[in-house]
Amino acid sequence: MIKTAVPLLLFWIVNIALAVFMYTNGHTDYESFEELFWFAVSFTLFFIITKEVVNKLLRVALLVYSVGLLLDIFDSFIGNTNLPILGLDTSLKNLGFLLISVGFYRMIKEKRKDVYKLKAEVERRRQLEQQMRYEANHDSMTGVGSRKACFEGLQAHKFAGLWLLYLDVDNFKQVNDTYGHHVGDKVLISFTQNMQQYFGLSHCFRIGGDEFIAYVDCELPNLDEIRSALLNGLLEYNINVSIGQVMVDPAKQADLLIHEADKQMYGDKKGKSLRSSSRG
Ligand SMILES: Nc1nc2c(ncn2[C@@H]2O[C@H](COP(=O)(O)OP(=O)(O)OP(=O)(O)O)[C@@H](O)[C@H]2O)c(=O)[nH]1
Image (cartoon, rainbow, N blue to C red):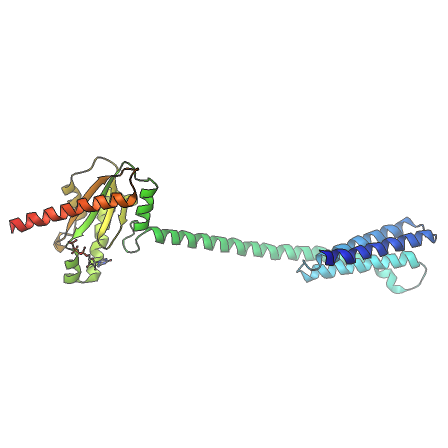
């Protein structure tokens, strides 16, 4: 700031001193002082913006214009010399003005390009952020909500007053062992597709390998009905579903709710295994 202000102040002092000197020496032509004033203004502007303006043409234009004004001053003050260069003042001023116009035009064009680039970058980042948010909130294999999204939803009381169902696929390990992991993956995908059809996508989450959470916003349907809907098309794999259910109480922590539903689910699993072993 001081680096700019001091030379400019000196420059203006010299100009004013020159004007006073000329005036006291009988030079009373008003136009000459006007030219001196505009030269000082133009040069000041050039001095201030020259570091900021990257557009070279604009800097040259301002310089040409200032030189034109300077010649004008010489013309007015030294008067009657026959220096031919002094006749160039108007041309230089006009040229300077034209170059300033072209310089501004080019600068605006460059800035517009920068704005487009910036807009494209903002859009790219917005999409990336959206994609990252999607990936964090969804299970990559099945497309249902992630464990994180499930807990956050509960903490935000999004599912208050709904039934929370904890679903665990029984005997899933043997699907992998018998048919291979790729078939195991397909079974999980089909299972979640059935879940989405039955509960709706926004109500389905995968919280572990073969463990899921679903929300029911109406009266809790019969568990056997849910089981048969979820196992639709998957019976050949000899799997079943254990279900634990709790009503979402917003006063309870998400962890506690899931834990309670998990306990219920184990009760269901145990009951089924006891029933099948007593039958066997
Ligand atoms: N194919 C596949 N398998 C997975 C995936 N995630 C976890 N698993 C497998 O799922 C199985 C889950 O283990 P368990 O719950 O003990 O298996 P389970 O046979 O269902 O046992 P129970 O629930 O007691 O009936 C493990 O063998 C994991 O390797 C996955 O994304 N794809």
